[in-house]
Length: 401
Image (tube, rainbow, N blue to C red):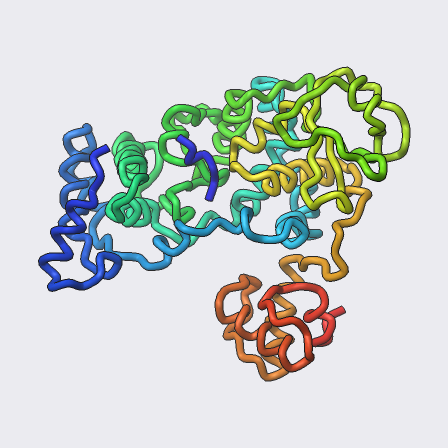
């Protein structure tokens, strides 16, 4: 879920009414028809054309997957080495380098206008939608209708996002059929929430429409505009990897900024052992603990993190931006003897599971319940801890290289 979602009348009453009409069926399984009709009426009152409201909300039904996903975000539960291996893999790096050349002119213009590093903008594009190749499985209005009608403290928020989605379509920026994205309502090549779209989207190709779905220039410029608005300054790096002295017990945390001279006094050095030359204030993080990589972050990292409130997510963008620009990977290895797998390796793992009798269905590289169940069976057979995690150990045991 993109944390462009950071920014009522709760609809739980409507759900309660539906529950009564359904003879006691749990709210999660009840029809949301009445709630959707109320949402249509509200949208029309807000200026949405009735035809658009009817067209985009027609057929909206309860979606168990949307509700289930709303309680879990992978960047907050997945080990960081798995998260990084999947998002910053060889294919995404290679594709990024090609697209850096293909869109050189646009990226240069975006960087000049907004003051945001072109490689960072490209990395957001790569992380959010694999450079526009995958924009999500959910029809945005229907996903938001489910969240708006689910009751709870965020119903009002999602109801507002739904109305804004219909407004975007009503004014002609994006065709109604192109609203596909995440379970939470983010859509387009760089996955903006509707409210963010309305406030920060940019018509960079000059066609009179702010179309982050079909226009690469609009998507890249809008992303740069978001990061600039979030505090990105082109005079700063996002941060850099550092060496921390053994036994260090001083301050750390992404909000605990200090001068470079202070970090020097605390014993920190550049990853190559040299002294710091920068004079910026930075904050120390150690996302995998004392035995993993350590980074000093500038306030530009805060802008990255505002795109999605996850340190793992911010580091994925940071690392991808470094690698597509010809930089080097982090020097300190993650503290694990069972590294994560790339997307290609996850696909191969599924094929290996099938080949060895652990049926996980048609291989697609996406690790869902069936794949995790197959991994657990394979781990049990080989006497490994049963985790269901797609890691190197089980991959190698099954014949992966």
